[in-house]
Length: 155
Image 1 (tube, one colour):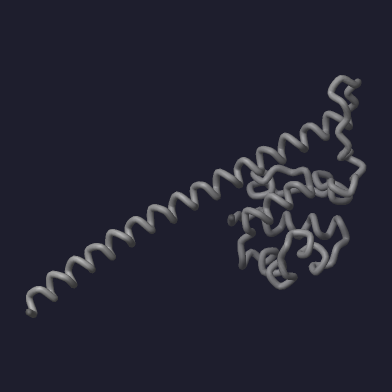
Image 2 (tube, rainbow, N blue to C red):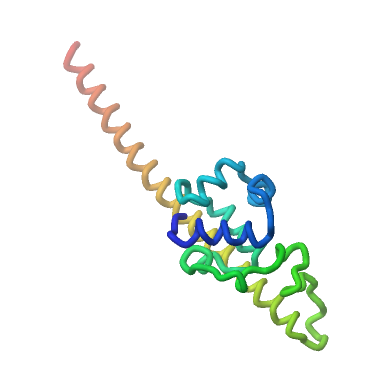
């Protein structure tokens, strides 16, 4: 997952949350060194870490990848820690909806979209690996056939 906006967006989020690389990296399940390389654009972010970042910020993966974020786009703290913009509490659907409930729903919809995109990316990658495996199996079969043919000529 590489994008020209993602490294800067990650850096902005980390700075807004006033977190050291060590703590922010821990949130995303990576080492501080890898986070540093990702922020510099040297390494790319894994799909799992991207989904986690989307979950923490309430910002879609597409937007994290493709759009430069502004300070006002980023919650004051991770959504899962009850940021003032979004309440993580989901109430009974029969109750009156406040704007906080609507924002929660929007965040959940974006999280579902992000997870769906991540699953689709993993499926596509798995399909590619299966295709490569079939090609390798065909090559191995050809090599086996050639070895048997050559062994038969030597007798």
